Image (cartoon, rainbow, N blue to C red):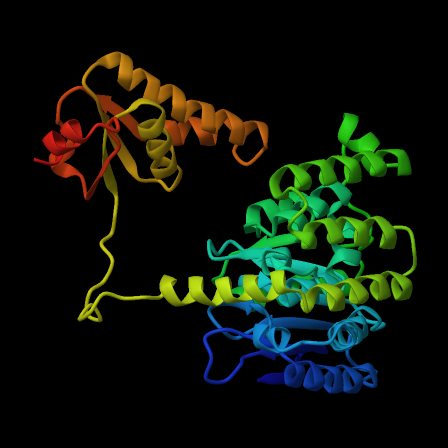
Length: 413
């Protein structure tokens, strides 16, 4: 499950859970990690510690949900959170630099382990997803996520990640300061060791809890308690609008961060662990976990006798019906670098499709998810027509015509 080796006076901990496609931070794994960290602390020859995974496309998928599912007492939930916090604190408290190498999914406890490290690097792997999805399971992060994430990426970005539960890709993680460097997968260990050497020799320095400076209003809001109060107020307003107050986890997360942002680590983590214990036993959390299991079950569901069937490589798409719906579909396809041909009955409808796609791309530019040139290149992959020219080359056709049965029947015929 856990192995340790050394290369050029650099310690390397590798996660590789046996007989499982993912790594999980269950009680047994955390115990072994704690013992290993105690041993490393006593080594005087080690200059730095690297933590990575041997599994393809996976760093650590999170804590073991089955252990959380079985919590029935808030005190037990709090103790489980405190145990995980204690182990991750050992990483943060080492006298040597610690570096998490993320080449895939790092969610929940996996993200929190990476946050405990001094540095985080990621690969360009499109499978990289880093985040804290705990609110989607009805509780708050319990291994230090509410304390560390806002201090690393800034309060506004940290609250967005915690309250939405949505992970970010490698590019967004780099821009937000969640990771410090991106490396190609090929030759990763060589580049990673070179990066660690730069850290050890003082060529790469940073303050772990100094998020990237922002300008204008965002910078003002991040820089003082008045601004923080506005961020918390707007966060609460947004959550109430979405949940009407019936979903306690995001509201509790706001309360936790608003308290532990201004106190030391021990007190801050205690606030978090108490909230985790309280929420982990609620009916909302238990039901959210059931929904998670169901979604995982049916996401992997296969049609009978389909074991030998592989997915078709989709390079070209036809969209029947432009307008807002067709334009939105075309945008999504072109975003994935799939050449898309929209068809409608007149050029005005096709133009509306272009406008709908362009509006989405303008939003991505505004959010700095894409540059203007990148958005233009992807828009160029969308073409329009009022006949079926080009559809004979499509790998897939998506129907998006008006919601009238007779028209849909005619189209399918």
